[in-house]
Image (tube, rainbow, N blue to C red; front, side, top):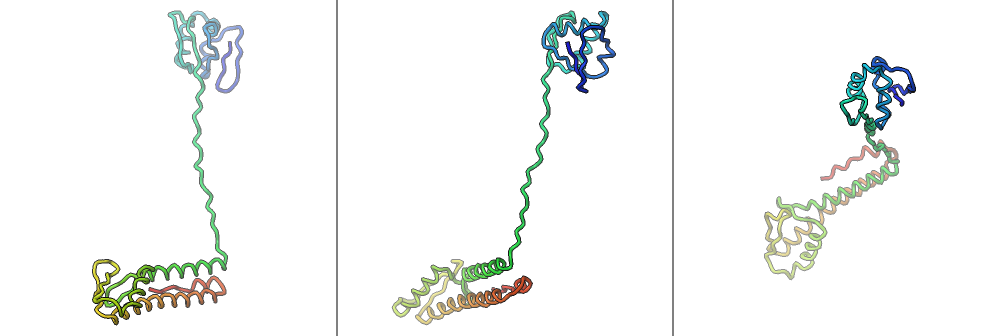
Length: 218
């Protein structure tokens, strides 16, 4: 019969007497799974302490279950399996990778920024007499078609505003020419401003000069 203490120190008991004071020194786990093991332990204790030892064991020893008779010597103790708590895993934190653009890459990025803004500004439309009209690719083709065939159209020609909440009636060919010219002027203004900015970007010789270039087109 063997009794082990939490200190991992093993005490082999083959004969002699084990008193309650010895058992109470630490919390022991009974390493026996049959009736003879429990009986052997109780036989090592003074006869007059059998009941007290059995009571102490049921209170202090980590036992999953026991089957008992009135006589403590018939009790069978079965140790509980040791369940170790799972330690929480530290959270996985993806490393933060910072990439610094080279000067050449910065210049390419600024050129792309100019192009993107040109597309956005043209997409916002063009304005005539306080009304804004679409300047999308589809709208440009429609205006081109009306302009080239303006002499053959039936008037008035109704053109909706960009927000579709209002419209304008063009009553003669000259009106179409005016609106088409406004569309072309808006596109030309945006694109020529982009060309100027790209020239400045190409001429920049360091990051400070590149950062000083401001695209303030509206």
